Image 1 (tube, rainbow, N blue to C red):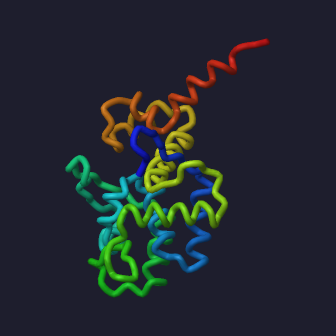
Image 2 (cartoon, rainbow, N blue to C red):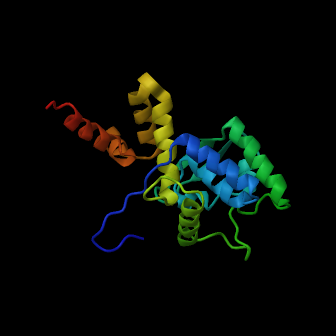
Length: 195
């Protein structure tokens, strides 16, 4: 949590760094953390919604329906085919028996708190020497958004419209600001000057 009267904004990871991190954590047998980050990067959900995921939601089809905690709106999430394999690998590696079990349980069999997850993310940032200033649970959602826009290429404006709807923002401008795109566009003004 930020200090009173200060602003901290989560930053995003570059996609190659993000997916590499998910793979490294899996190889080091940190299956739940690998899955948590992967779900954040591939689903673009808030941490409050990621914490509600169960194995049945992830394993029983190509999509799942989730009611967002913040908005109360239902979202249909499609699971990327390649990421579905990673989910299955984590499921097998953890030896899950109860598909209704939440995915992100601690050793005490309770769902991780957001504070604990942020602490884990800070440890990951340090251990893996991630080049990111503010790495928190919200970084996953921003990484998802930035990747969608980058992959869209010439269709970036259409991608922003879709992301605005996915993120439940009231306008594309808010989505641009949220992803840091608007600030980058404004900073480009300074590069246009000559000396």
